[in-house]
Length: 219
Image (cartoon, rainbow, N blue to C red):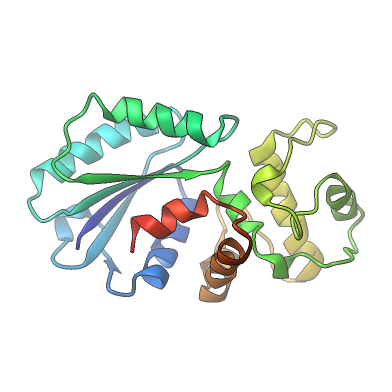
């Protein structure tokens, strides 16, 4: 099986998906470009964020249609301020006007990939040392409650996705002296143990339900 993947982000998702896909399906190996695929490969292109990823998706479909050995196209986007269904419908409607010779899987990262990352319960101390993190925990405890239900942080004027990213960074900084997270440096999420912890959170609690989109896309 050969899979071409469009991710929304410029850096973080591309690195994360490159690491996670073989964790889920060890038969798949990464190649730098769709033209280099032979057997059981995957390639990844960055969509450049909303709304730029629409033109990237169109180009990806043209590429897939021009190569006879591609079996699947995967499109991964954030829902941001939309509901899961609203974003899914937006992408589905856009695709309905395009012809693709292979099946398409849509991954909705609800509401961003950092929301999934907050599903790792081990990164959050039961009793945070950071005053900022203690305040965040009072607003919403991602260790016990579904991170996909995280609200905006109105006091800091952060939407849900921005709050999730900052929450993740503070949690990591609070527990691990030398570890953090940023869009340009998502290294902490690239380890198999981190990925397995997210799988366990989903399987045991059905939290981070949109993570199942990823699990279905590459099985």
